[in-house]
Length: 143
Image (tube, rainbow, N blue to C red; front, side, top):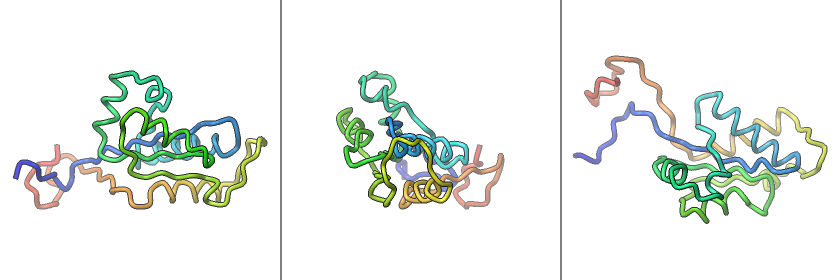
């Protein structure tokens, strides 16, 4: 069973935010930062995907799960990943969540939490095991 994955092995989840010039673009970025701070995903460079920087694209291709967070329906983040030949596992569009786009660069904490929850919907759980036996039963040692 060489393809079997250790149940306590961490899942590599990358998040690519839009970071556009509006409140929803900057909220997409803030959500990615928060997901990274919480240890639920790792924020990755969308500009590197658009520039087709081979090492960066190769690294992103090795992720288990990729999340694109776009501010609006133009979907620059999702389209950039697809143009780089990467599968997008979860695509979130803030305006589809009912958040109005403007250029005031302000948002509520409630809206930010809705974006974070939407990004994580369907995502695999990131498991962080302690050194030694984690008790998952896979006999991997969880190093």
